[in-house]
Amino acid sequence: MGSQTAIDTAPLIDSFGRVHKNLRISVTDRCNIRCFYCMPETVEFLPHKDILSFEEIARVVRVVAAAGVDRVRITGGEPLVRSQLHKLVGMVRAVEGIKDIAITTNGILLEDQAQRLKDAGLDRLNISLDTLDPKMYEKIARRKGLEKVLKGIVQAQEVGFKDIRLNAVALAGITETEIVPLALFARQNDLTLRFIEFMPLDGDQAWQTDQVISGETIRGVISEKVCELLPTKETVRSQPAVDFRYADGQGSVGFINSVSSPFCGACDRLRITADGRLRNCLFGTEEWNLIDTLRSGANDQTLLEIIRSGILKKKAGHGTDDVEFKRPGRAMYQIGG
Image (tube, rainbow, N blue to C red):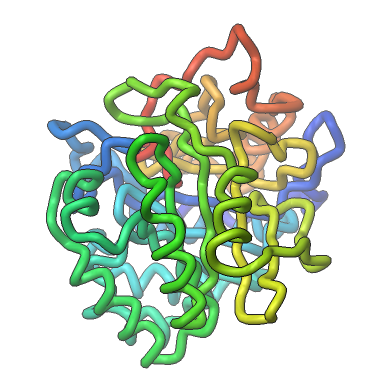
């Protein structure tokens, strides 16, 4: 486990004064589908020995929680393919200071795991759902699975999850027809819908700016064809989504405009990959090796110092709108959503 010596509990602040309270940690690079905007069709996954154990993950959470991190999001790959994931949720739940635990999942395995995740202390679910059309789903995911996702959503609601968000990646020339059906589905089923602009993190490295449907465009479509969307006062500056509410009060829609309108100025997130590398930005090109530190017998203060050094090197913005932008060497499935 490493030494649990006293550590410096000062907040995790970067050179721009941003306080980091949100940890996104990937538990696997494996996935049971192959969405082209996330990973290639053919891929070689990490061997199990090269990914963080639950105990190592819990230790990282405990160390950063002592320095003020209070929110944890578990990602992948697809986190639910990691065996006994509910046990990790319980370990994170037991960490003093953690107020909120969420998972981002494609939902295919959710029907069988929802109850265990709820019992273990999971607070929230983000479910990736780009379409309600089976053929379109298979075109994007390169696998079948839509029916299982929909059953997973129903089961999650039945076991008591109240805060379920649907994440839809907006893909020009592909998903324009899915905007209205998804909006109606979310409204009818008391789900929060979020549209995410297509980002340069696809496994095929084929991303182009003309493939991005802006959040502003999608908002216009929904306002015209579903119900007018109005700004909401509840939007938190540090969260990636800009939220709007329906004028009739029946639900809300969020837009993650990471390409057309970057939200870096209030970013409070740090990321750890499945193989134990700290990343201070989703689009960063530099990583800090934590797994070797965790397995070397180093104490908690040493671990925290490495994390602090990575946060201090965080840039003002991710730079996707810069002509000199250099895309990360890893795809989304290798980084963690």
